[in-house]
Image (tube, rainbow, N blue to C red; front, side, top):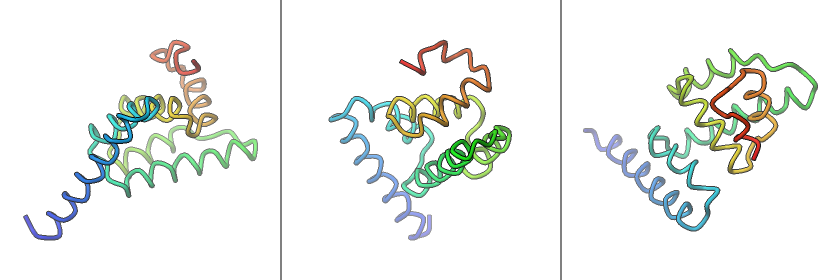
Length: 121
């Protein structure tokens, strides 16, 4: 492994440890932290996720109908997140209180039966 790759992996591990510490202190963080570690995200990946949600939040604010295939494709191409993992992302961010409008609208428009009303609790 090249030294730059090693440094990148060390930064990612440090980020994971910081998120684990936050999760121990805060129940709302646990699901997101688990997701970050499972998907092997770093801080830049998490920023990308927030950016994607922000773009779709702006569309909802303007009264536009979001194109969910674009949402899914963006997660797939930028972060390698497949459809099933995207549902986990939606759940984690909703539970944490982030981007609730986007999460709720995605679940409603995509008939996500897995949420079975639990997303909105």
